[in-house]
Length: 353
Image 1 (cartoon, rainbow, N blue to C red):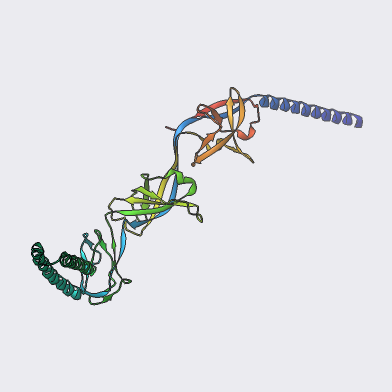
Image 2 (cartoon, one colour):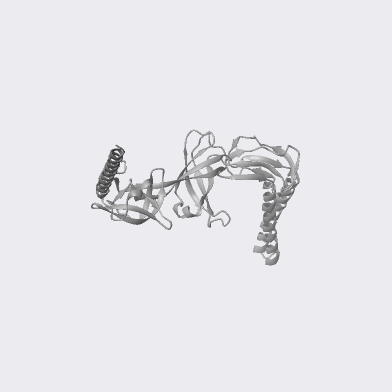
């Protein structure tokens, strides 16, 4: 009885072992069949497209012209016309200094000139009848010329006592009062041209070649609700050695209450623009230790190709070397693909129009 039980258990174990072997063989053969088939992946057709890199840099709005008003000569203020915050025309009299001494000297010279001119006229008649020598006549004529030069010099000195606006602009806050004694080192006020503004900003040196005179930039200001335009009028002659940036100056002709001199601006630049760029999805790029690769479709097989990338955004990256328009790159299953793997494309995508 015991022998029958042992024989029965042996048969059961043998049957289980045989069944397990058969199951393993079946699973192995199934896996082999699955691995021998082509991998199913998605592809992307490389096309030419316009692309540019958006760069945002800080900037500052400045008056197109700003002048600190000072006196050329020392003197006491006898007239003060400084309407703070008001726009005044070119030539507007801002400050008048005491000039009565100069006015008196001018009148004296004018009287002397009248006498000298009459003397020359009389001596001219005498010279005609040889009543005086040519030398005496020439000395009288020279005296007339000297008096005219002295009068011109005095008038220039008088003009320096009048401080006028060099251009149309807005008067700043005054720092002097009527009756004060001015010297050339004293700042009276400031004058700013308000019809136009300047926008100053700097760009990294790698973009220096992309910006030249006439380039249009867009910018916004803190608290502003809309973008504004400025036209580049000049660039610095060299890149700043410490910051490795190039200083740019643009002109803003637009008049808007948002645009106040001295305010901070955010300048948006579209640099590195390329109208025939080759773009691929970001996930198609395989980073390597020394380079970057993509997997190209070649009939039903693949080809690993080294590429050089350029401008990148959230979804696509520019390929500047290694691809051609019309190539199909693999975008899914990249980790499972090996050189010469057989693949099957199930879905092909293109750039959205």
